[in-house]
Amino acid sequence: MYTSSHQRLLHRHRQHLTIALIGGLVGIEFLENGMFVFAAAPILAALHAAPQDFALLQMAYAVGNMLMVVLQQWMTRHFGYRRYLLLALLLFGLGDIGCAIANNLPSLVAARMLQGMGGGAFFLSTRVLIPVLFSVERRPLAARAFMVAVFAAGALAPALAANLVHAAGWRWVFWIQLPAVVLLAVGVRRLMPRHLGKSLEPVRWSLAPVLLFLLAAGLLQWSLSEADFQLLAHPEKFALTVLVGITLLGLFGIHQWRHDEPLLHLRDLAHPGYLAGLGLYALYYFIVNFSNYLFPQFAEQGMRLPMLTTGWLNSFSGVVTLAAVLLYLRYSARIANKRAMMMTGCLCMAASAWWMSRLGADAPLAALLPPLAVRGLFGVLMVLPVASLTWKALGDTHFAKGYQAKNVMRQMMVSLASAVAAVSLQNARTAEFGTLAAELGEAGGAAMEAQATFLAGQQLYQWICGISMLAAVVVAVQKKLR
Image (cartoon, rainbow, N blue to C red):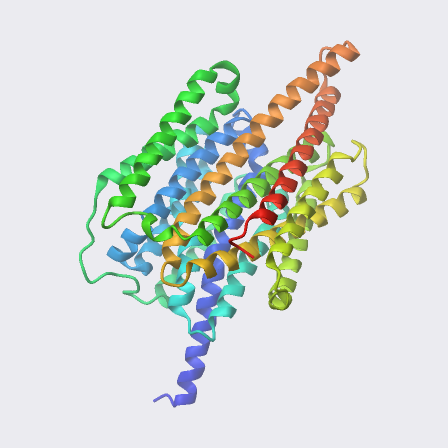
């Protein structure tokens, strides 16, 4: 028979394992996404797909991800968190296998959608479970592990993807995750309480709002994935598709507002502080994902850096972010003016983008390190204060509902930023190439293409600088989050 001290020791050990499980679940999605985005170019080239097909793959992942997010409360109430997370890990693992064995674009699109369905459960569920699984004393430790896992995965992903593609081939970007998926499934099976989250009352299922959301989100995501072609060739078709998607999304919102058991509890999320925080979250996700798409293109195609070098540079910026996270967790409580911190983060991104736009095409690697280090501060100084103030404004009662809606918005902004960046880079590159050809009287060539990409990248970095400065102004004038 265990003594009380042994029981306390076993309980503490189980709590530490559960904290590691939370970090592993959220970390694997960020690691997978980061590796895929970085390795997208060699993956598409291996499957003989066009570069613009990246947006289609992002669309598939986003639709699957958002579907799992909006179904989260229904499914956890019906199955409980343990079965829900085990199902998500199964879908994620099957998606991994599907991506690894894909031999053409349609099969990769289908696998990415399956993977998105699995991944959609991790970020939302792990954050929502922290106040449920842990005592008040242990919640700060669990929350810190959650944040560190997110930023550590983001720091590791580019360098790991670059080395895997270089040494073993692009399929290992997916194969390498399967052991972790199995280990996490064992952890969920053994550590997650069996009936946690399961409702004693039967859950009322309704197919209509699910189909309406899928149609609305699918149309919007598809229009973004086809934006590069449609804007140039069929602008009226693009505008109509977007308008129909927004209209359907509005109808879905009205339905959810009036429904007694909605997928998204919009009526409970009308707090001005929460809405202000959601808007700042949206700005952050747009800027950071626009930048994440642009840098590998700018470095590899414009500056002609090797993929391995680009991966390590990306991870260097991520390590700076991780170090800043650790400092933030230690000292942020001493800083009362969180709005000044958010403004500083936006200005750091503006300074980094301006710095990148002033570099020469033959700049040494050492010249890239300072702007990448400054960029690494943006995520910490901007999004972590936004997070703490947003959820403080909303309160504990509606935290899970608010986090669910925030994750739908997050996935939409990730897709929007990637699509806008892809369209803008392609259009700017085409314009620069035409100008260079007219000035130099040459028909093409790799050197001219690289120069056109570099000049287009400089132009887009100026855009990021302007958007980041605008974000700083928005932070300064808003009065709901301080």
